[in-house]
Image (cartoon, rainbow, N blue to C red; front, side, top):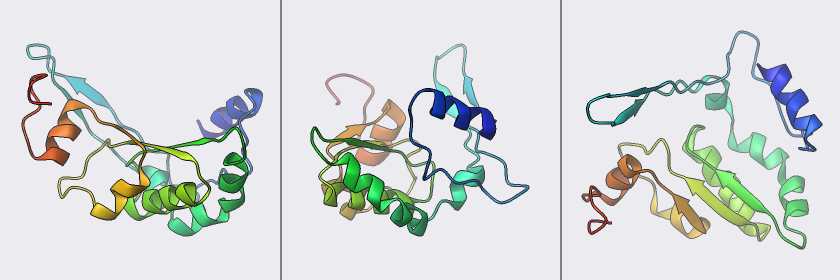
Length: 146
């Protein structure tokens, strides 16, 4: 699906100069979702694929794009945790240095939590109930809990 995704990006004006491909034989990641019909709770199994190979060095190569995105009227970096954590941290650091607004979707939340160094780099956190419960180490079942 990589070629069709890149063509779709191009057709919609998304810059692809920093899009890279994984090595031959490495597939893209998948995240199938199952839903328990009785409770409505979902479960997601994540297979990183090529995303698991994205490195902080790969992100540093795209630093000029961060700087350009930070020019008025300002840009946004949307990050998530489906790539190695150190890669997400590097992207957030470069975005902060470029004065971008940073948004972190905390899925999938690691069972060991996230490092304290991450939070000052994030302006907006997007967390589903399971991720919020894992990160807060507190109940999140009701509005009062949250």
